[in-house]
Image: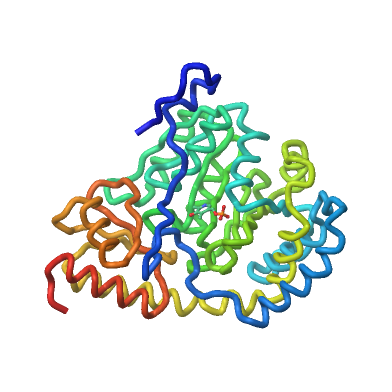
Length: 364
Ligand SMILES: *Cc1c(COP(=O)(O)O)cnc(C)c1O
């Protein structure tokens, strides 16, 4: 599916066969394809952000705080409240979404190779490629769960400088335990990067609690998923201060706009409100898993805000299109026979289940 680039274009050779990241952004009644939180910020929060933006607007002739110190301090407090840790701003890096964090990690630490265990977050290998970091596709069990002993063996044979673990994993939804992450930490050279984009939906303790003992464990978090703030583009890294110091080397000057910093600071003051929908989404997830099974489908166990399911007769692209024709946009993650659905609000979930039963020809 790669593009035919004109011959005069000096595009780097390793980019020629790539396609751009493209979860379709299509109009639909139920948008359940990018794992966003379906619940919008409250009018009170919107007002508070608008008020802060109004004060910031009159200072936009000046560059923002290059080091985003106020925001990083607030993020440290937020993490400490959730995980009973004692981080300071020196342990936190903030960026335009966790994707920028991932890119900065490759830029700073990608002198050697990197490994991840597929299927997992497709942007890890893609950003590695863009940053010219050699990537190894590690393997999982046939049911897509992670075999820790096998993972350790794969890490030890490929000797990466960066090892990526996504927990709960996207697109499968499964989480690895803290003991398993610790086992990986003990056996991993370089940095162990734990991508916790969906951590708030899981019962497992966060890997941030391992950083004090294992300074090469670095944890990526985001405000885009549970935190209901995807549009603002804020991701953050929790790590040993030496890791954070390296982020200063590779960041672009003033990379995080004054507007982004201000909006995120206000949102963190409303974190109780913003995370209030997590329990609701978790129970909606469990209910939807049960409904999918009642439709005769197989559902992978999920600790996140999405479900990966299989067992339908159509091909994945066929069922994806049939659902879209009925106004329901979900995700074909490129795994033969599987589709992924994000947990939406009550009406969206009902619309999805009703449309799916119609597509499958099952009465409910
Ligand atoms: C969604 C997602 C991210 C990226 O989120 P940002 O919006 O860039 O913060 C990172 N990792 C995983 C596993 C994700 O699913």
